[in-house]
Length: 114
Length: 114
Image (tube, rainbow over all chains, first blue to last red; front, side, top):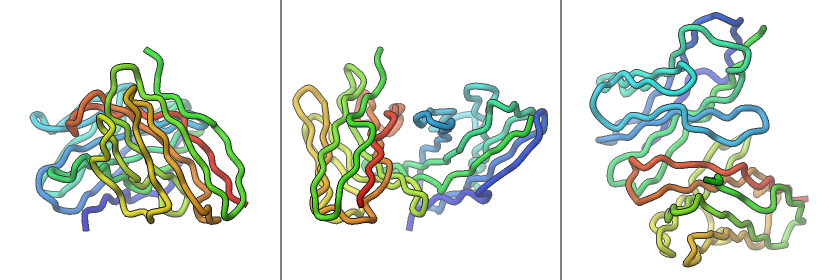
C-alpha cells in the first residue's frame, strides 16, 4: 500500500541546533513530495515541495529538503532552529495516477527550547 | 487574497445526529479537498471536488459525503455521527487539478461528538 513514514514522533532541540526530520515513502512510481508545518493554533502551511529537477529543494524560513530517489526519502533539514520553529511537521506524497490523493505521514512534533 | 475559510470553527454534536461543514476556497480556486485529522490516524484524505464533480474519494464510509457549488464553495456532511468522528476537519483548495498546484489549507472545523 502507498504510505508515508515519519520516523520521529517528537523531537526536542535547543535553539541553534541543527534539525533533520526523516520522511520515507513506499514505492509507487513517480511522486510529488511536500512538507507542511502546523504551528500551535494555526493552520497547515506549505514549507516546500518537490516535483522534478534539482533534488535539493529550498523552502521558506530557512528549511530545505533533499529527495533521494534510491532511498525513497525526502528528509527535511534546517541548519539552526529557533524557538519559533516549535510546531508539528508533516511530510506528504501524491503518487502519480492517484487523482491527487495526498498521503500524509503521522507528523513529527518539534519542540525547540530557548 | 483571503485564505481558505471554514465554518463553523467549533461544533459539538451528539451520537446519531448529522452535521454539515462549510468551506470557502481562495478566490479563483476550483478544487476543494477535505481531510480528517485525529491524534490516532493523523491526516486522512476524504474527497476532492473540482467544478462541482467529485474527482476522488478516500476510504471512508458512505456516511461521509460532500458537494461543491458553482461558486466552488464546498460542504461536507456526516450523517449518523459516531464518537469516532470527533476530529479536526480540514479543507484545502488549489487553483487547478494538477497535483503540482499548491494546496492551501483552512483553519479547520473542530467537531466533538458526545
